[in-house]
Image 1 (cartoon, rainbow, N blue to C red):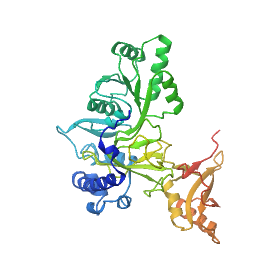
Image 2 (cartoon, one colour):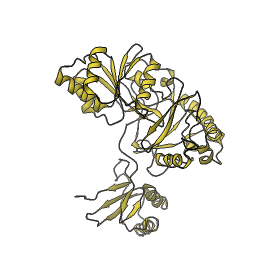
Image 3 (tube, rainbow, N blue to C red):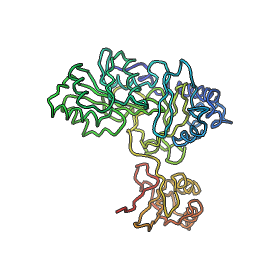
Image 4 (tube, rainbow, N blue to C red):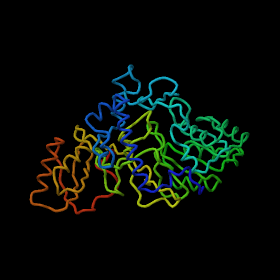
Length: 415
């Protein structure tokens, strides 16, 4: 568990930044030349000039719902909506579908999703037999894990989902070394084994993903002899971050560039502030540039005690899409940001919606550097102008708002 997957994990932060920014510029040029979507989205941007995080932050964010809309608009001419550099042929191994549906390409090269790094951090080694309980039906979850396991030299049993008794029988017969799948199904397997007396003692390690993995469940599994780690991966991006033996957040994968932005915007937040995770992948086959995941997280200070030097994030902290309906009108986080940007005195803003039985009330809570005369009234007018709704304004000192990534808080009673 102390060994690293490769030298990329332990290179200096300065070296990583130089190498990734060089790769970023090349990826921007590649995306412009080989995908119709980014030829349009990045039109007018000089790829050679996008060689720093400041320059990257000037590019537009593409969020998942926008990708879905583009895919739908361009079918059947292009199943991927112009985002994939692979359309057909030997380099495209599979096409997967995520809810929407959104269609994702799977390249034929080994470890396409880069999950071997996360599996190695979880203790998997060549020769292990991996019991893979992610779904093999339509979605890529099982193949994300399988490709990483095969790249490490492991053997995979494609268990899939459901059929708990049959899975327990296979574990007893085949004696796999580890498990890949959701943490909740692993718990189901363990509980069912305890109930029926099935022998699953061979399972000593696990890499879980796809849902929350609270410390209480991690400790519960450890008490039963299974050391489990989690990773954060998506069908669009592959591996984004993974847990290490230090258990201190998740280390960002070497094949992506991450940013944390204020929800509803593309503006990076200061280190430690909760915001939406935006990812740029260096995958040439599916070159997503500033892809908004919709997930909230924050950067942890310092480096991982495991010796890995890349950025660490806290893991999943909720959803960034906080759009809500007030008095029949949709209010978006981006509108709150528009209000805040009109006033240099404003540091941070949070819209709180309260009330019950259709009696909606809005209050904009605003951290300010200074309280100039008439500021609250001017902010109220801006809210009215942008949202077409009235709101009470509360001026607060800096640091008064919680650091939880919320731009809109729905505090209404629905009982």
